[in-house]
Each structure stands twice: as structure tokens, then as C-alpha cells.
Image (cartoon, rainbow, N blue to C red; front, side, top):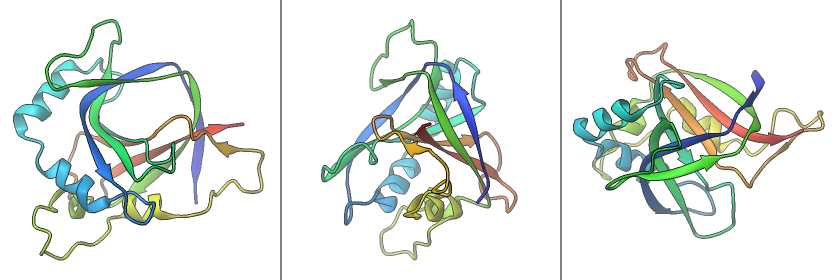
Length: 175
């Protein structure tokens, strides 16, 4: 599994946050997908309009790796200038300067976006499958996941249903 390690300066993600129940101590992909499905064009446009431009797309932030609680927080947002404070329904999630293992994921992610009806078939998309892996590809290296920092999914602007759509999973690490 290919990945790259990248050092990122401190940044803030601002977005809509929802507390979601875990399923068997794992992320609830259906509930996350439903959260994305219910994001209106107006809310997406609001997030794009407040972006500081450091990422050209949206971020999914999950703190499910931080604790063994039965719930986790999931945020759909974008990187912002942290000098301004969040308004209305939006919440800020600050991130310290950190190293990240960044995994590329190629393929349509529409399975997650279209999960509106729990009776419809639900198949894990490639990013969901990547997140389910129980092992780290760097086991032979002196790297550990930094569970004090949430994982981030990066969704660039583009056709998320395209077979060649490229998104990323950012895992905070300690070296």
C-alpha cells in the first residue's frame, strides 16, 4: 500500500459536526454517508466560500481513532484562517503542526454519498475499505498513529462518481 509522509503546519478545519454512534467500535459508514447526503448545496457553497484556499475541496474529519467511546464526532468542513471565529452552525477543529501518512484512494465514492435510504444496498467504497484495514503499512518502520489527532479524508472538487476520482486519507503519525 503506497503512502507518503508529509509535515503540515498547524491549521483549522471549520464545518458541520455531528456526533455518530460507533458500530462494533468502528466508524458507522452508513451514518457518515447519510450526513454527507443531507448536506445541501447551500451548505457546500458556504464551506467553499469560507475556505482559505489551502485545500481545493472538502474535508471529512473523524475523531473515532481518539478514544474507545461509543460515539465519535464527524465534521464535514474545509481549512480556514483560524483568526476568524466560527459562526452559526459551524464548528472549529484546530490541528497542531504534525506529520501525516497520506494514502491515495482512486475510485468513485458515490456509494457513500448516495446512502439516503437504509433499505437500499450499501457497498463500501474504496476509501471506506481503506479505513477498515486493521494494520498499518509501516509496521516495519518506527512510526505510530497519533491517536490524539483525528484522521482526515480529503475530497478534492470534481466528479466523485468517476472511476478515476482521487481522494486521500490522512492519518496523523508519530515518528
